Length: 263
View 1 (cartoon, rainbow, N blue to C red):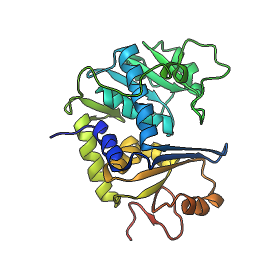
View 2 (cartoon, helix red, strand yellow):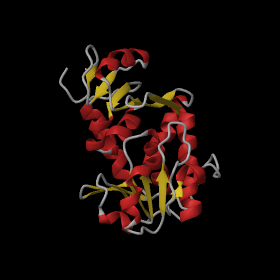
View 3 (cartoon, helix red, strand yellow):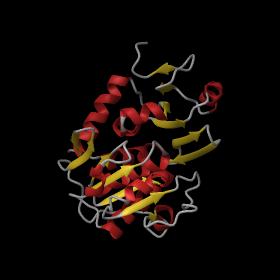
View 4 (spheres, rainbow, N blue to C red):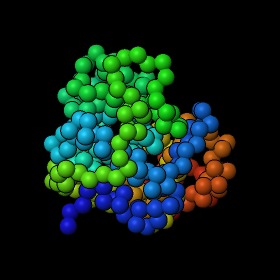
């Protein structure tokens, strides 16, 4: 049976729902957030309910993201795919395609140029480590953190996602929901990801590689993630030990295998 990204999260919950699934560091601010499979799934469910109930997101919808690599971005991606929607992932602030989406979710510091495009629906994310709302913002965007809290902890799509429907639009490439899973599994094999791996991922590399590489491939392999934004090289060896890292993506740490590099 063809599968979708929502199935990869379900697999992680069946393996060990209480174990850390995504740990997020920002060395510029000193923030650290750890999410178990259960906690990430809760954020995904709340976000999917928000998208479905408030914005009628479902199969045939397009959800555009103007977000960095972040634990909240992971939740938004998985939520959109749980609804059966296509994700338009863009790294440019002035990409006119964002205005064509049914819903745009953007980091607070990227809202100003997007407001000028007058998208159908615009949600702003503070990306606060504890999920708090936007501070000092008075524009038209709705505050994701405030909106999402009101929604349920479990999600059931009105219409089950169709693996043949569009799942990701990025860089001129379109992948169906089912193809996202197959591509993630193939990439996991090529990178050398293993079940149970704890993968430290450089956010800069992740942003260039895209969500199939930094999010779906580890999930497909049965691995967990340690995302590092603005990594301080002096902290990485100790962090790898503390987080029991077994592999890295986009960064070299002595004694730990680097994914995609010959052994």
